[in-house]
Length: 202
Image 1 (cartoon, one colour):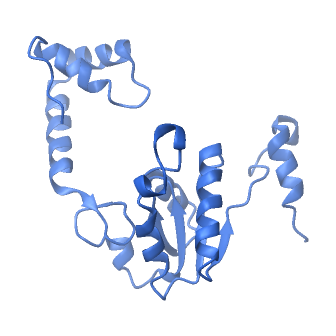
Image 2 (tube, rainbow, N blue to C red; image 1 turned 90 degrees about the horizontal axis):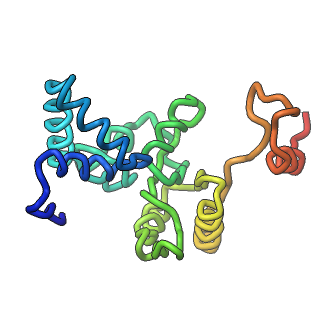
């Protein structure tokens, strides 16, 4: 961890630290810092203690690569999950979104990123050999690629599909289409075109 310059005050340290959060610029960080110090010092203390505790106690689960306290997280250790299904997502937040649907009972692997050559993230930097080892444990029968439908997410899914299919695994990809409750009038043309391509027989 790079230390802060000694010339900065404690307040400047705090503002600079808050800027590491996604979407937080200089003014937002400044507002947060002043709010915590002026209006919610107990909240600031809880935030600091919680962050310190998380950094000290959380690790990566040896099976799914998400955050966990133990070497194997409770989800991976559960005998109720279908171990033959492995859903690959980019982030722990994506994992939680899939869980919220209550429609998937398999296991997961969290990439903690995606392939992005412009950002220096290749297969080695992303640690994809660990995913390959996980998928080839002899139990997994189908890998569901649930990376995002961005250029990087698509490239990641394509690369993984090639690598995993060559090893005899069944590969599937999340479908795209009109959202539940969506009206065609407000759906973008790309999504609508994809919905037509992925239509199913009733």
